[in-house]
Length: 373
Ligand code: NAD
Image (cartoon, rainbow, N blue to C red; front, side, top):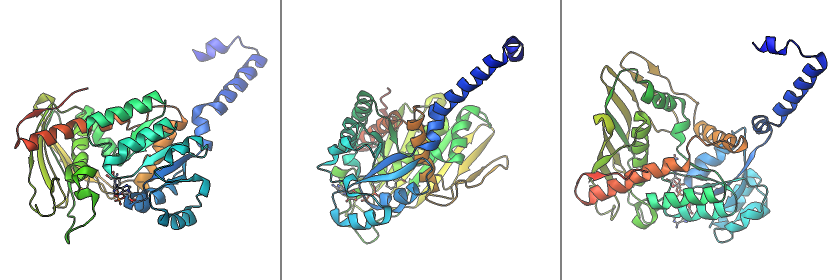
């Protein structure tokens, strides 16, 4: 067909057309993406930023560590020395809004404790910077919605640091939610936890209710997100039980939360999240078989198998390759001006579930319906 249509073209017309097509390709967002690196400022220079994100940024193709925002100036000599970040790109939380005037910085990656995510996202959005925000996106769905709105109003992207959604085996599980290779999904199990604070802890924000502490915020979001991406559906109701054991350590926050999510089609997800047990398993039971990943939310080594003998070998290599892949994908979404893989709305959907989990646990496992968009 194409050949027939072009048969009447003169050689000059054809050459002109090729030149135009070449110029268009040269200027397409896609080819721009090959050349440019997104300047990223890390907000909060704690464990995750230092141990995983900063090293991962060195492995990316489309990002560079361009800025630092911290309340601890004593950390700066080491960070600036190691990553060559100039003084003009260093901010405190108080003068962080001045980032608006800094053309070196395109995106701000929020890696502070959970209670600060919303405030930091709103500052970054108002400064016209794209917002990458760690999980859980905020303290509740209302905060998350405010972040989505601010980013929409300021025309910047908002993406949540759900690194697993960039991991190939996880993406395979996401595809199976619609492909249904073993028929109808009947039941899921998603358990995520780690044994923490063997020797107590004085100033840990993960133990502080005011700063978004507790296992549910920290690890429970992996269960909720996995249950949602493995079914491709939104849960409608939940029952939750706070099974905290070390009450002297966990005051006003959950050490262990068990919860049961009801999905459409009578699908049920049984989940446990904990700071008192090492847990890392996702299992999907279907009419004619099953598939499982364990670990399913590790920094590396995520893999599993299926009842038909399929083996899901770990992908992406060792940590922090997953974080590099995540940030490259998020950078490409900015450069190519398209929606990111994990938009802010995805974080809000999980927070709606968390809101209902906390309400149910408070009412000793009463069935609570989950707000829908
Ligand atoms: P962290 O305690 O190691 O670091 C937090 C940083 O925030 C520190 O630099 C601290 O100085 C700073 N900070 C600013 N205000 C603070 C306050 N009021 N109280 C305490 N610290 C304050 O924590 P982290 O493990 O790096 O976690 C940070 C964020 O990253 C959290 O939202 C967490 O859920 C997320 N995280 C995500 C992953 C993942 O795999 N995606 C892994 C770890 C942490």
